[in-house]
Length: 465
Image 1 (spheres, rainbow, N blue to C red):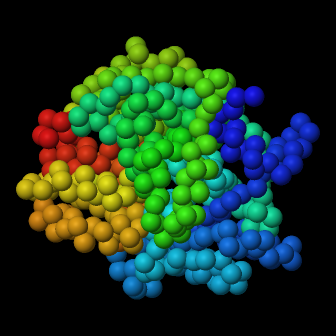
Image 2 (cartoon, rainbow, N blue to C red; image 1 turned 180 degrees about the vertical axis):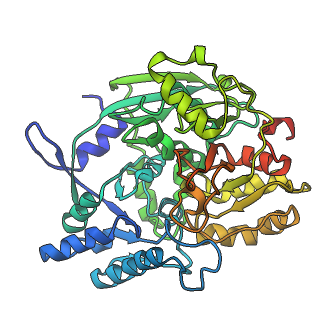
Image 3 (cartoon, rainbow, N blue to C red; image 1 turned 180 degrees about the horizontal axis):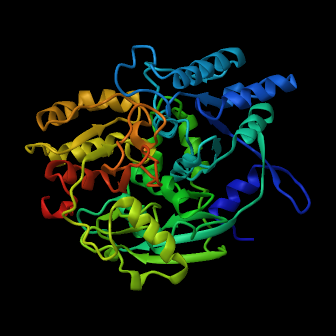
């Protein structure tokens, strides 16, 4: 039987199947951070069991960590407690931990690929919804809840129902100034924030293949924002070249053998998906969100939909969203003033993202009305930014590079957007209060964020490229 890429990986990891129930799925790599792990570790200790395969688990603090003065004790009591608890649990159970100030520390979904821990054909889980990021390498990667984290710690397996399969093809060539973030925001705007519910999505087509690994990670990262269980992209030479030479990647002859195996991870020609969608790359332009879920997005040069364009069932929630955002139906997006710009997160905190921002702001100055937080996704990204002169370019333009962490993606650390303020963010969610109580979030690409930072307002970056 012809198989999809997803089926090949999933089926190879099924330990057993429960009749009319979920599969017992073996997990190759378990990623852990400080937010969802304390209860899980406490749970296995209560049961009197230890971590079954600690060598398959890697931990790092990211959600709660401050992005300035990381050499000092964390001020927030709860954040400090969670980070300290992670340290104690990892020491007790022999789990590898890249703690604060370790050269490998960073956002869990940035360090996994960067260190070569993420590889094609793997099953990867983490107590975090954006685990789907790792699917960019041709892996089945998905987020799990705290009780499931406990299950994986204890057994290296998880009970999981097999999702349906969807393929989204983006065909043709992307226009200049259109990035991976624009691609996924466009897709979500078309299928809605629930259009992928119940599915695992394979992204394919010329435009997807043309993306760098960083771009593919951005696309898979945000597959969750269309309600999907996860997203993945078949590995190719771009994938193999990215992995080669990384800290924990296979070396020498082992790498060559691994590539031979990795090349078998693709969807067979006659394989059938439960649903298939096609989009044209030529239709995609720089995007931005205007509402309170990632599906409420539009081309920057367009207007917010009028009430006549909104389905009757959705009008009430649409009007509520507009009230929260301080917008009106039919408003033009371009030209609206902005207060904050955030470049970072597991969606866009990689070195390529920082390079893109630096290239754009070089020779320009940050607008006076903008507070900008540029946050690397890891210590390695931070180091590269210094080595490549990115930090110097940013500082000359009036920006300052902060230290690694999830930062202003979510209001779980010190980097919160004040109530009523507008933030153009390269992160993944724009829910009410996501970046702070009353904060108003507009999701966009790093390129758009850079353009907003130097103009002080929403602008199509192509107009000043």
